Image (cartoon, rainbow, N blue to C red; front, side, top):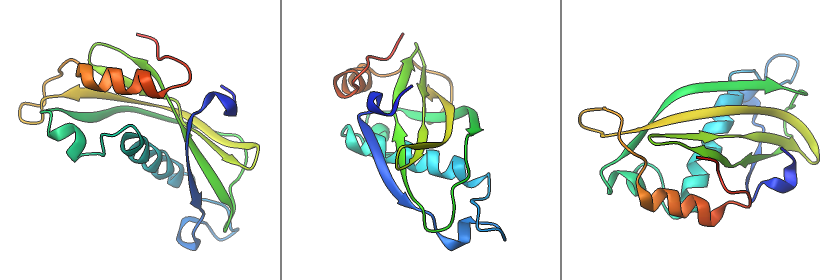
Length: 144
């Protein structure tokens, strides 16, 4: 992907508690940054998590998370957490997050969530309202 392919980004400043002794962001925090990006993405399309989905009888469960590290983020860096939905399957949603410091790609990854009934936790089709909201929001239409 290229940064211009992302309609959504969320600014985040690296805090002291997120860095190691060398002042470099500890690797596990990138998944937290991705999670912040997903949460803010849902808010941006009009379905703040978890209430925006729960009121429609659905919830999302993480089934896959990957991170590729391209450069080190440092204490006090201002990062842009870029988030887009790349694919919506029958019951899954795939995000492609990228984290930038200015124009430098710091990290990229993949997040896959399965939509499920929150009571039974059995997979369920992604609701049509969510498909439409994502499709209307994204610059590049997610694949099916």
